[in-house]
Length: 233
Image (cartoon, rainbow, N blue to C red; front, side, top):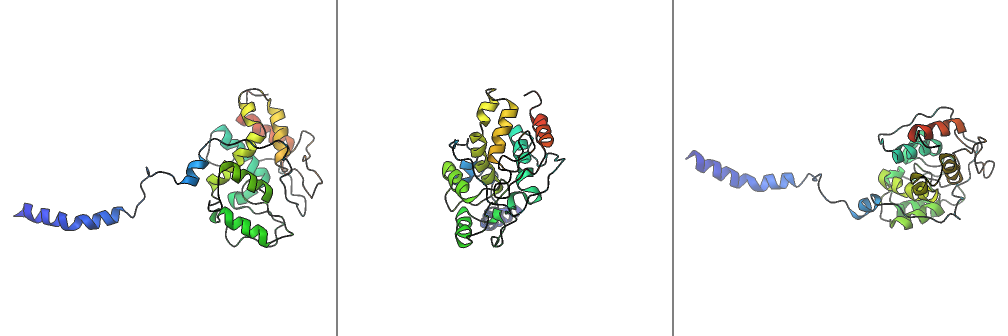
């Protein structure tokens, strides 16, 4: 009799248990198209497109010490952290160029690329650098196209990192990794892409152009790179 009751209970409860389990996403579920593309190797961008920066209203303060942040321990993660310190500061992935008078209605990581493009179109005459790596409109369009990210793609932290990898390859990251480019030359290339990074003279490659200036010293930049690649000169 007891076995019969147990079987009846299980039969009645099974549909409810199935509905309950469907509320949770399996960790082994496949990535959507945007997430899958973010995990792939980056594409190369032309060396001729170097001026990626929106005008700044005032020079930003120089950071003398910039400890590496973030959770990633791989060299490329630590490099992205170092770049982000120069470009986005504490706002990280939700940074918007501080000279923008009209901000997006939501944090950047809650927006799709299409919503960012609309914000850009609807707020002319102001800087639009956005995200952890301070993409300006022409750069954002280019690297998103290189990655195959459409307007429906959300500007998540993973998507931003994937877009930044396009610019790293533009700076010669693959050649640097293979030993064909020394560390200081690679640093100079990075400084030609991100205005917050300094050249050996301590100045931005874009110093004085549209208000740009380096936001960390060469010693900090070089020290950070030496921590990541201590055996590379």
